Image (tube, rainbow, N blue to C red; front, side, top):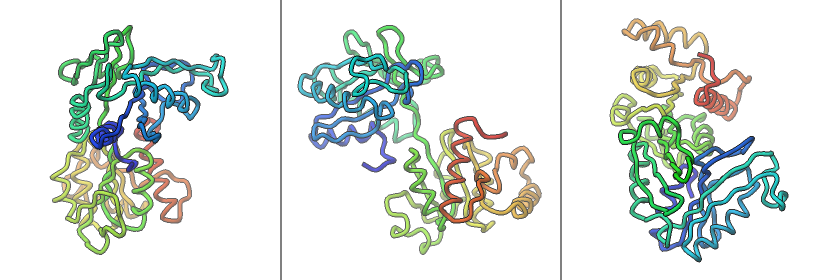
Length: 324
């Protein structure tokens, strides 16, 4: 599994390959449960599993339950907490509690593969979508922010015998400049759950040998970005040090909904960039969206450390812990 592949897409692919698969989803949490509502785990009949529903505390027990669900075609509701009799084996040592639902795909009470296809299509199109599951009769309805905005604002979860799972738009990182730092930042971001796109017009930089397994666009940023939507789940960083590439990308980004925008360069370089871009008509408020020098100040020196600082800054912004 590519780390950037969504659980939904992977479940559909495995099902289409002829494997029996089940999805385990966190419905509710109490206390210090390590994974949030909506966290998912895919369990396959060949014994493989992907994703997680806790910090490793209950996955073994969930796999056993999912394996039985694949045999019977019956959905299962599970609840685990620190007070469980076999707490060391399947309890949450952190003290929290979680409630899960396990759904086999295409079997008995389980999820219809057609619904799974629609979820995967929405994910690929970067469209938020949700599924309302009746825990009594196991009927499922697809919903959207247009059909039920209040549920999306609340973030889903279980209310009585109705569980609403909101499939959020995947996180995405756009890197302008297929440079040495990008070779570290791309895998770090992918491991953190981002779909990664790298843009650079230079063939020798943006080569498959340097960025195998990532989406690489060999084009000028102003051309490539017009074909993309920088939405609220997208971060963009420029790493080239070349105004011919960085400036158009930053101009496009500040006019978008991207939640994070960063530009590599020293404090002096960023000050010169600011004056240049203000002279070109960018407002001070727009320029203030650009973090420069990019990344958290952790004393980074090597390309790997700089990449780490950038991902840390993006994470802080995403989680509401960044200044400004």
